[in-house]
Amino acid sequence: MRFPPSFIDEVKARLPVSEVVGRRVKLKRAGREFKGLSPFQQEKTPSFTVNDQKQFYHDFSTGKHGNIFDFVMETEGVSFPEAVERLASMAGLPLPRNSREEEQREQRQKSLFEVMDLATKFFEQNLASRDGAQARGYLSDRAIAASSIVEFRIGYAAADRFALKEYLGAKGIPVEDMIEAGLLIAGDDIPVPYDRFRDRIIIPIHDQRGRVIGFGGRALKKDVQPKYLNSPETSIFHKGSIVFNFHRARQPAHEANSVVAVEGYMDAIAVYQAGIKAVVATMGTAFTEEQIATLWRLSPEPVVCFDSDRAGIAAANRSVDRILPLLRVGKTFRFVFMDEQKDPDDLIREKGVEAFRSVLSGSLPLWDVLWHRETDGQDVRTPDRQAALEQKLYALVRTIQDQAVNTAFFRTSRMQLANLFWQVNRRPARNYKEADSRLNPKLKFDGEGQRSGLQKTVLGMLVQYPDLLEDKRDAVLRLQFPDLFDQFLSHLFQLLVTEAKLSVSVIWDKLGEEFYDVLQTVHGKAGAGKERGHRLFERFPILSRDPPPDFVSDCLDHFIKILHWHELEDDIQRARLDAGQGDESAVARLLCLVREGHAEQESISAEGVTLSERAEDIIRIWAPQSGTMHLAA
Image (cartoon, rainbow, N blue to C red):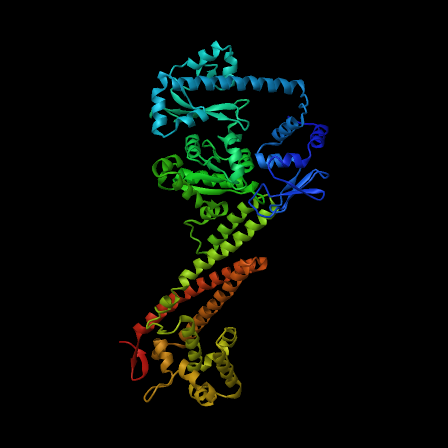
């Protein structure tokens, strides 16, 4: 029903905001306004204000505000037309007359509601009769209490093909009305219409006002398919816009600021009678935009239960795709996956309602479900696969229409992608020491960390092979060394300028005494009979075999590259901290650093394999004899 602006203004003029709000909130006058505790969340200090002159309320604790219609919709979970009807009744105003066509349509729907109510009574009577004994036994086995049977108006449809048709006919209901209400199966190829529901437990489905608009029928025999049969689409029953038990759950949901959505109406009944009144069911259908909006009218963050089997997870994933475009600030979903393939009904009967509450307490945010879906089992060790995952995730985030939520999801996506790629790239790097140890004989960093050991190895190799100093200058100077090592390196490069010919002996003789300990550490001359280079050869034994110069040069490049990778890790850690504090530029920088680190790691891994093979060849074909190297026989 559409209402003219003049009628809306008249309702607002007759009802002060304080009168409407005062039915739910204890208000105290404060100057020209009224104050009270927020009806939207728990608080001790009043932050809720009402101004009758401005016909406006504002809740500073949640940011919610509006007029009397907004207040009724927010606190009672009703639609705008329903809010207008309630407030018009409160104001003593008759509703405006509709057009003749609208009046006829409403009158027609009213007739169908009456037909559905008569059918409900018939099914209730059947359940209580002798014919309903088996159905009552089934409900007893499912632990459905007698009080729940009455409250939910559960009934039974007998096996007779014409039982309901004859009952309604005796009440003067035309067959055409029964067909239109979805109670009979009819068609051009069916000469005599017959009852749709037969030998089934019947659960009435109500609209948001509590009127019966359809039925769900549960077969009693195991071999009958489908197990659950719903009413067809009719002028009053639109399956995609209905959630089961909305009219009962509305008030409890607003009081608890939470609602639980389960998959089937039997589960909803079991949860409801166990004491969790804010529960609805989606009747097994995939989420529609209308159902999502309906659930948000009950709670800003509904909790949806799915089975943990393949079908349940698939349903959750479909729901995520439906919800994403509709997300907005303060409106989202959480997800629960039932373990051990138990329904909420089974869990409550076996372990009690507290077990179900415990499951609900472990609900997952929508983002977690989306992230797990896109990343679980994905191999993202290569740049192309990382790019594919990034592109797919960004495409999903772009479907979010609310700009603020879109920005937040995009930021989170980049942050977690960077973290994922960083973790993936770090795993092989942990084995760098092992990979480098394939350089046979292996690197030995006993009692030293890999980074510290490599720093000393690089400096020792520059001392042992001073001819490489000029060539490696730029790459080495870009590395970060501890202060004393850094000073040592600077003086080592100065010798290139001051000395005509640089050798190991010259370095030992010309470097200042303050660097003697460093020389001992990185190169080494330990005791009588120990040659210069002793500590270097301990760390990298293959050098004692005088390998080819190109091999030495390539090994030095390799070690420099690994040290650069370690420094990238430091930068990544700092960027992660900055990104975690909401620095948008840090998030972008983090992803770039992770990509750079991954490319570096790929190169290091490939080089490690090649150098390992070359080292094995050196060991095989070169043999030490009298301090020199010769081809092995």
